[in-house]
Image (cartoon, rainbow, N blue to C red; front, side, top):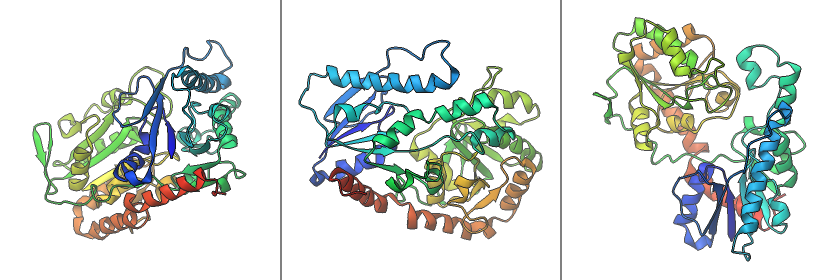
Length: 409
């Protein structure tokens, strides 16, 4: 089977599937990739089609059309790259694409006989969504229009696909009801053999070496931003430090905004929080940036509590990886988290905005370590039973084959 993977930052969500294909040559898959020129990640592929839009959205265009024009430019860029390819015989049997950017928008026109299996991460809602959650106020008419129009390339993908995939029930429920029957809920999975408990591990953080005996809490996110509760986390840490003189805090993530809007004053959220929290003991807060997976795993193995806060939005892999490692997750009481964590059974839920409650909860955990051991075991069992990559990848391949041969309804 000849597959064309389309992802701006390939391999992205296809990383685990790609390894499954590499480890199973009898599947007979020819991997081809279309990705942005600036993508420097390493992977194996028969053909690689690098593309880049020739310009950004038109200056002064209606604000509600900016994301749509950018998507069209992305689709045009890949379409043009494929047209200019010297390999005129290339025809994929299956196209697997990540929806939203617009890169795959015109591929059904170029390859009408190919099946299209599209990965849907997020469908935008102006009312009751992520943006209103943060502000606590209804979006005004202009914002509501802009947010609705961000779905334009996604709707094009929903109309063009042969079938879709969505990682969680919460995210699936955001899609328009008419399309949901043709989109399977199937998570990418977690490597539960890699992410597993090891209470004897030690992790070097700067000049420190931490173990499970130390009073360490962790926070992990792609970017330090409102969507992942970074301001609330830092304010909670400021409270905790006054109560816990031995507390050490380790933060993984880049000093940028990956999701949501940037600050209007031009500062990063890290800069803003360090300015706001003037009495914060920064010697006990360790910013490590992005780290390799073994470092993440080590931190998850030793932490007393892993804090994961998120608005109602895409659920992070890191939360599932923490649960697989047998980590006690203190998660926000929001829809995507509640899908996996049952408060007091396999983790702990706290209000997103209530930093005092968060601090009280962390203190109780630190003072009553033994009481939370069963929750950590249940957290790992949750991932083993429903999200283990070794079990999900065969299901994933079954879905791929059924879409490719046209049997998927």
